[in-house]
Length: 347
Image 1: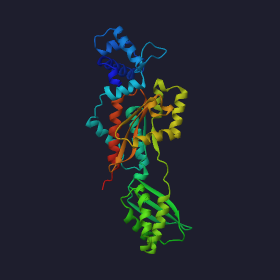
Image 2 (image 1 turned 120 degrees about the horizontal axis):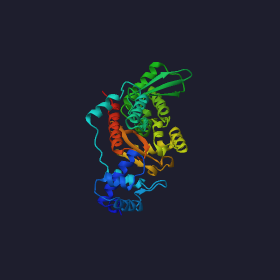
Image 3 (image 1 turned 90 degrees about the vertical axis):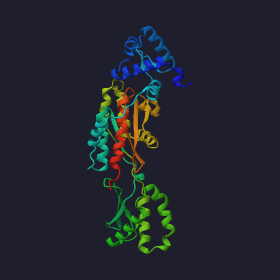
Image 4 (image 1 turned 30 degrees about the vertical axis):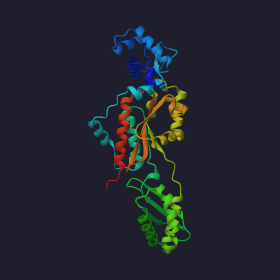
């Protein structure tokens, strides 16, 4: 049986009114309030009967301390999927968001500013993952000689994304030799991402190693070292965690401590965000839907952002389940689009 078949039109309307009121006030909603706000000319007794049915079917529950009702995860899910009207942001608001993106900073600072922007707009915790390095297209590679047969490999992905790696060589190379090797590798690798490089480059070039000259063979060996190194774990920047202290349902000391520990340890939240990278469009995890107990009282709203039509990261907000979804969803969606547009190369 679907949720729609469980609820008639009147019950759906009352559920929507209840959730709107609870999101706004944070207090259990009583039958008299619902009867007044619903504008359906229903008596409190009729509303109580509908509420009893909603409670029996798992859409609302009664806290022990109150005769009013609050939504359950099932109620929120039905509300988000079937009752919520989400309007796109006005063009003026989009322009304001775009103007807040500082493009003259490095990647970490840009991601940090977006996280702060999300937090400021929603009054929740904003979170943005750094772009997944394996999906960044390489623009060029450079080599600089160091002491003791070491070489600094510089991988340039964009004006904001540069990775440095130190490799050890069998002998010392002159700057001219390293320049020729770098030119050769750039010619063969430019435009490929690290995943493509690891999968195909080394294998293909090893097969042709016998046909290239000695300098190019050295270049291949250096490339093997450079691209066999694992990149650091994808990370994220979170801002506005203290906003969560403003919500009564999250301000319990133990809940906050476990939530802040999750932000600091990052492993569980990173795993959740990684699932969102593989998904299309806005994703919403309500309460225990996230699969992580520490987020049982929270909702996570995310959207992936893309560069060159390839998803490289995800951003979103974390807050209580009684967040203003109609406001949060378009902010997250629009910000993801703007960040992707800002990261696309401007050639």
